[in-house]
Image (cartoon, rainbow, N blue to C red; front, side, top):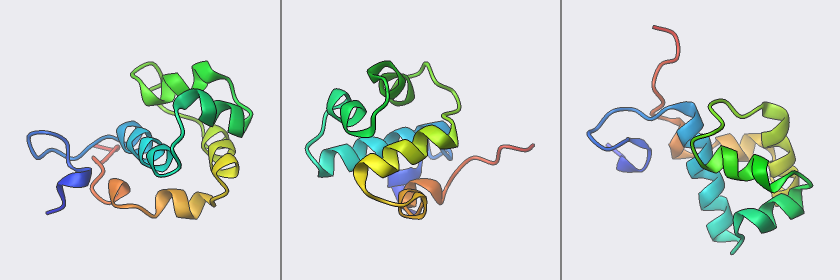
Amino acid sequence: MNVGYIAQGGDPIKLKDAISRRIKLLCKERNLNPSSLAYLCGIDRSTVYSILGDKSKSPEVATIKKICDGLEITLGEFFCSPEFDGLEQEIK
């Protein structure tokens, strides 16, 4: 089992946490900090910080698309990552 997408304790992670992890990984690969990412994507720094922190519980797809555009990747490339393979089921 790949622990890269499993929360501590072996539980599946939530979608919001997977999105946050993916953005952090992409920023690290490109040597970007959250402020630089916001500038690059044309979105408010507070939006980026809320997605990376605990404030935003469900980032909008339009915002993720802007991030993808700024990073010059597609939504498909964004979501094609192990972080999204072990998500907690949303409907119970």
